[in-house]
Figure 1 (cartoon, rainbow, N blue to C red):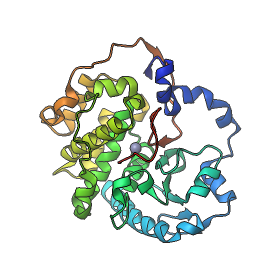
Figure 2: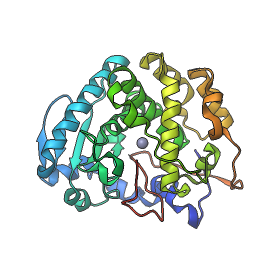
Figure 3: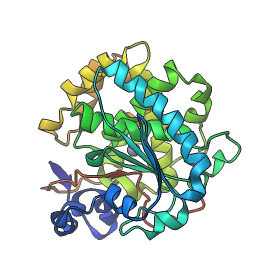
Figure 4: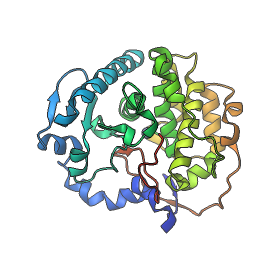
Length: 315
Ligand SMILES: [Zn+2]
């Protein structure tokens, strides 16, 4: 794939993108150290079921609630898509989270599509601080993470543009919430950011990704949820998935221009341009010389931009 050439200020992109493919390669070569294997070696509690869950003993109550919720979503995804996609949920407390060899920052949920694994914190309100009063904080995020696994492993859908993969995960989340969990709509749609963001164009997000800053990135995630809701509305998820497979086949994963991506999205549901609004605006950053690079493909995590203090997160 083609990635922008990384500079010092762009190193955060590399944390989950281009550079990771090189710096992590020796570790990956050692293999047999999977995330799930590491968790099992920590002697956590486990429950079997359609979606097995492995969890820190202190997180049992929430782990089982998240498992029950995700299990229902997982069953719906499989039924709608007519495909089996094994999925395991890990729910970890802070102590377990940070005891791992390569943990993401505390409470930042993520998935490992190669392992069919979703890794979730026991207290996502440490990441989504507005969630504290919700019955099961961040419940909808588990559907997003499962969406990454279904897209990449179940359907072979993957774009070379990271934000597109986030939007696709949001499409799974939005489809499920529209059909089966409308009670979570408001929570999923939350518009926490009233102030004008520095970056509002997807072209800028494409250039610097995590370096847009955390609040700005969260704004993009909310906007991509809004776009995702439009794209999946009034369509069967299987039909949407078939169109995504045509538009973003993993076998031909490539980074594309915003204009080209919009053409793809028009095939999924016409009218997307008027939905995009300022997301379709011109880039405000100077073009960076493209360079060839292979992206890391084994994991996905919601990134944490550089220079961002945790504890200020809102989604
Ligand atoms: Zn994601």
